[in-house]
Length: 178
Length: 139
Image (cartoon, rainbow over all chains, first blue to last red):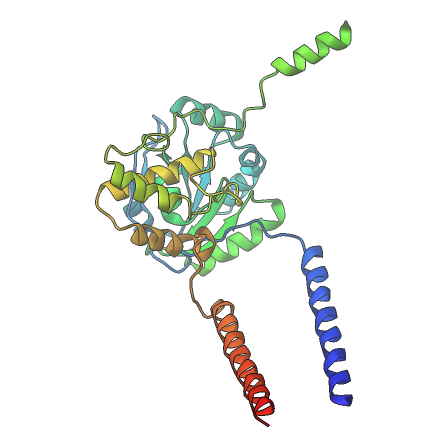
Protein backbone atom coordinates (compact mmCIF):
# COMPACT_ATOMS: atom_id res chain seq x y z
CA UNK A 1 0.00 0.00 0.00
CA UNK A 2 2.82 2.33 0.99
CA UNK A 3 4.65 1.40 -2.21
CA UNK A 4 1.65 2.42 -4.29
CA UNK A 5 1.48 5.81 -2.55
CA UNK A 6 5.15 6.52 -3.24
CA UNK A 7 4.61 5.44 -6.83
CA UNK A 8 1.70 7.89 -7.24
CA UNK A 9 3.68 10.77 -5.71
CA UNK A 10 6.47 9.86 -8.07
CA UNK A 11 4.05 10.25 -11.00
CA UNK A 12 2.97 13.68 -9.70
CA UNK A 13 6.62 14.76 -9.42
CA UNK A 14 7.32 13.49 -12.95
CA UNK A 15 4.35 15.44 -14.37
CA UNK A 16 5.36 18.58 -12.45
CA UNK A 17 8.92 18.26 -13.76
CA UNK A 18 7.63 17.86 -17.30
CA UNK A 19 5.44 20.97 -17.06
CA UNK A 20 8.36 22.86 -15.52
CA UNK A 21 10.46 21.90 -18.54
CA UNK A 22 7.69 23.08 -20.93
CA UNK A 23 7.40 26.39 -19.05
CA UNK A 24 11.17 26.89 -19.20
CA UNK A 25 11.46 26.08 -22.91
CA UNK A 26 8.44 28.24 -23.83
CA UNK A 27 9.99 31.29 -22.16
CA UNK A 28 13.36 30.89 -23.92
CA UNK A 29 13.90 33.17 -26.94
CA UNK A 30 13.68 31.24 -30.20
CA UNK A 31 16.87 30.87 -32.18
CA UNK A 32 15.85 31.39 -35.81
CA UNK A 33 19.33 31.10 -37.25
CA UNK A 34 20.25 28.08 -39.31
CA UNK A 35 24.00 27.74 -38.99
CA UNK A 36 26.04 26.43 -41.87
CA UNK A 37 27.41 22.93 -41.40
CA UNK A 38 30.29 23.82 -43.75
CA UNK A 39 32.58 25.35 -41.10
CA UNK A 40 35.93 23.57 -41.37
CA UNK A 41 35.15 22.39 -44.91
CA UNK A 42 36.82 23.59 -48.11
CA UNK A 43 34.72 26.02 -50.11
CA UNK A 44 32.76 24.16 -52.85
CA UNK A 45 33.89 24.79 -56.42
CA UNK A 46 32.09 27.63 -58.19
CA UNK A 47 32.69 30.34 -60.77
CA UNK A 48 30.44 33.41 -60.73
CA UNK A 49 30.20 36.04 -63.45
CA UNK A 50 31.06 39.61 -62.41
CA UNK A 51 28.18 41.42 -60.71
CA UNK A 52 29.65 44.76 -61.84
CA UNK A 53 31.15 45.87 -65.13
CA UNK A 54 34.10 47.50 -63.36
CA UNK A 55 35.20 44.60 -61.14
CA UNK A 56 36.09 40.93 -61.66
CA UNK A 57 33.72 38.12 -60.69
CA UNK A 58 34.44 35.49 -58.06
CA UNK A 59 35.45 31.85 -58.27
CA UNK A 60 36.44 29.30 -55.64
CA UNK A 61 40.02 29.46 -57.01
CA UNK A 62 40.18 33.14 -56.00
CA UNK A 63 39.48 32.07 -52.42
CA UNK A 64 42.41 29.64 -52.25
CA UNK A 65 45.15 32.08 -53.29
CA UNK A 66 46.95 32.01 -49.93
CA UNK A 67 45.32 35.15 -48.58
CA UNK A 68 42.53 34.81 -45.96
CA UNK A 69 39.38 36.69 -46.89
CA UNK A 70 35.94 37.72 -45.79
CA UNK A 71 33.18 36.54 -48.11
CA UNK A 72 30.19 38.84 -47.73
CA UNK A 73 26.85 37.60 -49.03
CA UNK A 74 24.65 40.59 -49.75
CA UNK A 75 22.04 42.05 -52.09
CA UNK A 76 20.99 45.53 -53.13
CA UNK A 77 17.39 44.72 -52.10
CA UNK A 78 18.45 43.69 -48.57
CA UNK A 79 17.84 46.36 -45.94
CA UNK A 80 20.20 45.09 -43.19
CA UNK A 81 22.98 45.05 -45.82
CA UNK A 82 22.77 48.85 -45.83
CA UNK A 83 23.12 48.88 -42.06
CA UNK A 84 26.32 46.82 -42.14
CA UNK A 85 28.01 48.81 -44.94
CA UNK A 86 29.96 51.14 -42.56
CA UNK A 87 31.26 48.10 -40.65
CA UNK A 88 32.50 46.52 -43.88
CA UNK A 89 34.37 49.76 -44.60
CA UNK A 90 35.93 49.60 -41.12
CA UNK A 91 36.96 45.98 -41.68
CA UNK A 92 38.51 46.86 -45.04
CA UNK A 93 40.37 49.81 -43.50
CA UNK A 94 41.69 47.43 -40.82
CA UNK A 95 43.33 45.36 -43.55
CA UNK A 96 40.69 42.74 -44.31
CA UNK A 97 40.28 41.69 -47.91
CA UNK A 98 36.54 41.42 -48.60
CA UNK A 99 34.93 39.76 -51.60
CA UNK A 100 31.20 39.92 -52.27
CA UNK A 101 28.54 37.59 -53.57
CA UNK A 102 25.44 39.45 -54.78
CA UNK A 103 22.30 37.33 -54.49
CA UNK A 104 19.58 37.61 -57.19
CA UNK A 105 20.64 41.04 -58.27
CA UNK A 106 20.83 43.12 -61.48
CA UNK A 107 24.18 44.77 -62.37
CA UNK A 108 22.66 48.26 -62.37
CA UNK A 109 21.09 47.69 -58.94
CA UNK A 110 24.39 46.41 -57.48
CA UNK A 111 26.27 49.37 -58.96
CA UNK A 112 23.75 51.85 -57.55
CA UNK A 113 23.83 50.17 -54.13
CA UNK A 114 27.64 50.24 -53.91
CA UNK A 115 27.69 53.82 -55.19
CA UNK A 116 25.48 54.93 -52.30
CA UNK A 117 26.70 52.74 -49.46
CA UNK A 118 30.36 52.32 -50.41
CA UNK A 119 32.21 49.49 -52.13
CA UNK A 120 34.50 47.54 -49.79
CA UNK A 121 34.94 44.62 -52.24
CA UNK A 122 37.90 43.59 -54.38
CA UNK A 123 35.71 41.17 -56.35
CA UNK A 124 31.94 40.76 -56.64
CA UNK A 125 30.33 37.63 -58.08
CA UNK A 126 26.67 37.46 -59.11
CA UNK A 127 24.67 34.50 -57.79
CA UNK A 128 21.43 34.74 -59.78
CA UNK A 129 19.74 31.56 -58.54
CA UNK A 130 21.32 31.37 -55.04
CA UNK A 131 23.31 28.35 -56.19
CA UNK A 132 26.56 29.28 -54.45
CA UNK A 133 24.66 30.51 -51.41
CA UNK A 134 23.02 27.10 -51.07
CA UNK A 135 26.32 25.28 -51.57
CA UNK A 136 27.83 27.34 -48.70
CA UNK A 137 25.00 26.50 -46.30
CA UNK A 138 23.97 30.15 -46.09
CA UNK A 139 20.29 30.77 -45.45
CA UNK A 140 19.91 34.51 -45.93
CA UNK A 141 21.41 37.95 -46.51
CA UNK A 142 23.58 39.37 -45.14
CA UNK A 143 26.00 36.70 -44.02
CA UNK A 144 29.78 36.82 -43.81
CA UNK A 145 32.18 33.88 -43.98
CA UNK A 146 35.84 33.85 -42.97
CA UNK A 147 37.83 31.75 -45.47
CA UNK A 148 41.50 30.94 -44.87
CA UNK A 149 44.26 31.06 -47.50
CA UNK A 150 43.62 27.45 -48.51
CA UNK A 151 39.97 28.12 -49.20
CA UNK A 152 38.69 26.46 -45.99
CA UNK A 153 35.68 28.08 -44.29
CA UNK A 154 36.61 28.84 -40.67
CA UNK A 155 33.74 31.01 -39.41
CA UNK A 156 30.25 32.21 -40.28
CA UNK A 157 28.62 35.44 -39.11
CA UNK A 158 24.83 35.43 -39.60
CA UNK A 159 22.99 38.72 -39.98
CA UNK A 160 24.32 42.25 -40.31
CA UNK A 161 27.71 43.07 -38.81
CA UNK A 162 27.24 45.61 -36.02
CA UNK A 163 30.09 47.74 -34.64
CA UNK A 164 30.49 45.40 -31.64
CA UNK A 165 31.10 42.42 -33.98
CA UNK A 166 34.05 44.00 -35.80
CA UNK A 167 36.84 43.07 -33.31
CA UNK A 168 35.62 39.45 -33.15
CA UNK A 169 35.58 39.11 -36.93
CA UNK A 170 39.07 40.64 -37.22
CA UNK A 171 40.28 38.15 -34.60
CA UNK A 172 38.77 35.25 -36.62
CA UNK A 173 40.49 36.58 -39.71
CA UNK A 174 43.85 36.71 -37.86
CA UNK A 175 43.30 33.13 -36.66
CA UNK A 176 42.78 32.20 -40.30
CA UNK A 177 46.29 33.51 -40.98
CA UNK A 178 45.91 37.15 -42.04
CA UNK B 1 -15.22 60.81 -47.96
CA UNK B 2 -11.70 61.56 -46.81
CA UNK B 3 -11.61 58.29 -44.91
CA UNK B 4 -12.78 56.46 -48.01
CA UNK B 5 -10.03 58.09 -50.10
CA UNK B 6 -7.46 57.18 -47.49
CA UNK B 7 -8.67 53.58 -47.53
CA UNK B 8 -8.48 53.44 -51.33
CA UNK B 9 -4.96 54.90 -51.24
CA UNK B 10 -3.99 52.31 -48.64
CA UNK B 11 -5.37 49.48 -50.74
CA UNK B 12 -3.46 50.67 -53.82
CA UNK B 13 -0.16 51.26 -52.02
CA UNK B 14 2.57 48.91 -53.26
CA UNK B 15 4.15 46.81 -50.53
CA UNK B 16 7.66 47.89 -49.62
CA UNK B 17 10.03 46.13 -51.98
CA UNK B 18 12.12 43.84 -49.81
CA UNK B 19 12.30 41.31 -52.61
CA UNK B 20 14.78 40.86 -55.39
CA UNK B 21 14.08 42.01 -58.94
CA UNK B 22 15.29 38.95 -60.84
CA UNK B 23 12.87 36.44 -62.39
CA UNK B 24 12.56 33.09 -60.56
CA UNK B 25 15.04 30.32 -61.42
CA UNK B 26 13.95 28.31 -64.52
CA UNK B 27 12.65 25.31 -62.57
CA UNK B 28 11.26 27.16 -59.55
CA UNK B 29 7.69 27.12 -60.91
CA UNK B 30 8.18 24.89 -63.94
CA UNK B 31 7.56 21.16 -63.65
CA UNK B 32 9.89 18.59 -65.16
CA UNK B 33 8.73 17.19 -68.50
CA UNK B 34 8.91 13.59 -67.27
CA UNK B 35 5.96 13.03 -64.88
CA UNK B 36 7.81 10.27 -63.04
CA UNK B 37 10.81 12.49 -62.31
CA UNK B 38 8.49 15.35 -61.34
CA UNK B 39 6.74 13.01 -58.87
CA UNK B 40 10.11 12.16 -57.31
CA UNK B 41 11.01 15.83 -57.10
CA UNK B 42 7.65 16.78 -55.57
CA UNK B 43 7.92 14.07 -52.95
CA UNK B 44 11.38 15.31 -51.97
CA UNK B 45 10.39 18.99 -52.01
CA UNK B 46 7.56 18.34 -49.55
CA UNK B 47 10.08 17.01 -47.02
CA UNK B 48 12.66 19.83 -47.28
CA UNK B 49 12.42 22.90 -45.07
CA UNK B 50 12.33 26.40 -46.50
CA UNK B 51 15.16 28.20 -44.70
CA UNK B 52 13.52 31.58 -45.09
CA UNK B 53 10.07 30.64 -43.80
CA UNK B 54 11.00 27.85 -41.50
CA UNK B 55 7.61 26.27 -40.89
CA UNK B 56 6.99 25.60 -44.57
CA UNK B 57 8.40 23.10 -46.98
CA UNK B 58 10.06 24.38 -50.15
CA UNK B 59 7.09 22.96 -52.08
CA UNK B 60 4.70 25.22 -50.13
CA UNK B 61 6.73 28.42 -50.03
CA UNK B 62 6.82 31.35 -52.43
CA UNK B 63 10.06 32.76 -50.99
CA UNK B 64 12.64 33.34 -53.77
CA UNK B 65 15.12 31.13 -51.91
CA UNK B 66 12.59 28.27 -51.81
CA UNK B 67 12.20 28.70 -55.58
CA UNK B 68 15.97 28.45 -55.98
CA UNK B 69 15.98 25.30 -53.84
CA UNK B 70 13.20 23.77 -56.00
CA UNK B 71 15.30 24.58 -59.06
CA UNK B 72 18.24 22.73 -57.47
CA UNK B 73 16.07 19.71 -56.63
CA UNK B 74 14.47 19.51 -60.09
CA UNK B 75 17.66 20.01 -62.11
CA UNK B 76 19.54 17.49 -59.99
CA UNK B 77 16.76 14.91 -60.34
CA UNK B 78 16.59 15.57 -64.09
CA UNK B 79 20.36 14.94 -64.18
CA UNK B 80 19.73 11.50 -62.69
CA UNK B 81 20.62 12.15 -59.07
CA UNK B 82 18.94 10.08 -56.37
CA UNK B 83 16.49 12.08 -54.17
CA UNK B 84 18.15 10.83 -50.99
CA UNK B 85 21.55 12.02 -52.28
CA UNK B 86 20.08 15.50 -52.78
CA UNK B 87 18.72 15.41 -49.23
CA UNK B 88 22.17 14.33 -47.98
CA UNK B 89 23.78 17.19 -49.96
CA UNK B 90 21.52 19.70 -48.19
CA UNK B 91 21.99 18.11 -44.74
CA UNK B 92 25.74 18.34 -45.29
CA UNK B 93 25.29 22.11 -45.68
CA UNK B 94 22.49 23.00 -43.28
CA UNK B 95 22.37 20.13 -40.81
CA UNK B 96 19.38 17.89 -40.04
CA UNK B 97 17.12 20.94 -39.64
CA UNK B 98 16.71 21.31 -43.40
CA UNK B 99 15.00 17.92 -43.68
CA UNK B 100 11.56 17.09 -42.29
CA UNK B 101 12.31 13.38 -42.48
CA UNK B 102 13.47 12.16 -39.06
CA UNK B 103 16.78 10.29 -38.89
CA UNK B 104 18.18 8.03 -36.19
CA UNK B 105 21.20 9.88 -34.77
CA UNK B 106 23.02 10.10 -31.43
CA UNK B 107 20.51 12.77 -30.36
CA UNK B 108 17.29 11.23 -31.70
CA UNK B 109 17.61 7.49 -30.95
CA UNK B 110 15.57 7.68 -27.68
CA UNK B 111 12.56 8.83 -29.73
CA UNK B 112 12.69 5.54 -31.58
CA UNK B 113 13.84 3.36 -28.66
CA UNK B 114 11.36 4.50 -25.98
CA UNK B 115 8.15 3.35 -27.76
CA UNK B 116 9.76 -0.04 -28.43
CA UNK B 117 10.85 -0.30 -24.78
CA UNK B 118 7.32 0.61 -23.62
CA UNK B 119 5.81 -2.07 -25.87
CA UNK B 120 8.18 -4.66 -24.44
CA UNK B 121 7.34 -3.62 -20.85
CA UNK B 122 3.59 -3.72 -21.59
CA UNK B 123 3.99 -7.18 -23.10
CA UNK B 124 5.65 -8.52 -19.92
CA UNK B 125 3.13 -6.85 -17.58
CA UNK B 126 0.15 -8.22 -19.53
CA UNK B 127 1.71 -11.67 -19.71
CA UNK B 128 2.20 -11.62 -15.95
CA UNK B 129 -1.42 -10.62 -15.36
CA UNK B 130 -2.89 -13.18 -17.72
CA UNK B 131 -0.72 -15.90 -16.23
CA UNK B 132 -1.96 -14.99 -12.72
CA UNK B 133 -5.59 -14.87 -13.85
CA UNK B 134 -5.51 -18.24 -15.60
CA UNK B 135 -3.82 -19.74 -12.52
CA UNK B 136 -6.60 -18.24 -10.35
CA UNK B 137 -9.28 -19.65 -12.68
CA UNK B 138 -7.70 -23.07 -12.56
CA UNK B 139 -8.08 -23.34 -8.76
